Length: 109
Image (tube, rainbow, N blue to C red; front, side, top):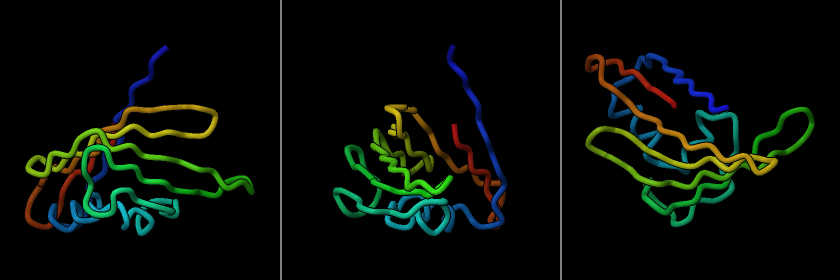
């Protein structure tokens, strides 16, 4: 049975500042509970890119891989597949919507 959720949060930062953290996979470790192990190819988020991360929980180091499907810079949206342990694969969409010059809404679906 499919399950769909769409967490969202208002961020007290401009959309440009928020997008810069999402658009540069090497910075994911600054805001996610994970360490970036590699980004290939290196650089800004782009279709075909693979981001390898690790996260520790319950005393175990978990490996996670993000496969970027598409990036829409104008609409501040990245679509990717998340490859989790136990062969779980999720299709995710992360996007930013400007509220005003000092805040934006970040959605993760």
